[in-house]
Image 1 (cartoon, rainbow, N blue to C red):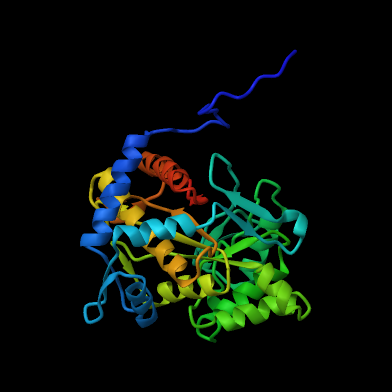
Image 2 (cartoon, rainbow, N blue to C red):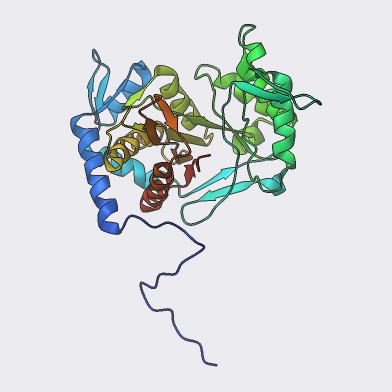
Length: 335
């Protein structure tokens, strides 16, 4: 049978999905986001972040800690953000390359602060999580074939009062999984220690530690439209060391975002794009992913409704937005 050329502009479907936004919808959300970033701006108290934004051409009020980001700065950042991000694993065969598009991988979600413990008689109790609990959870995540990534699901709260809980949590994670993982409780001032830990794992090979960082980061803005100093430092130092970092918004419709889903989607998008922009003006091409754990607030109880159908709708919309930008996505599925 003779071959034929593929028609220009041919589109095909990979897998199943919930496609709730068309190209016009995506463009409208993008333009509304640019308007928010340029006219309302974001807030951060971190002096280094304020200076980086100013040097990139943003309008910065250093006294009020407000940054207004013009369209061209955002668009330039989106062009330099990579469409593929490698999460390195201790076992190279388990490396995960995140790509923009309809590609699905699975990971647990954190970070919890309590442990639900059963005894042999069927009774249970809820208590603060410990380093020993974290070790058990990492072993389970490493064992589960369905998980491509073994994110720490709980904290080592027994180390909080002793100090340097972050290093103990990272050591526990690194020693109990061969999969890649993302750490969500980083201290922006401890990145030299994180690199040293990475270098030790590689037997002192500094070049390999820089080329294949085994620790990926995740940090969340404070909705609406605020980055604390530590969050800004995590973005900046991850970018400087080419450590993959997920900028993950957790806006709540009706709480820390507008009550309408589309309004909250614009807030969510503005927060993530502001973080991605900060990473790219720090180091062009720095590995970043677009993160979302946005849902609605339960107005009766004042809690995040992570099992609500609206969370699935927002998640589907965010997946489309990340594809629109050509950036890998980390989307929370709800529970």
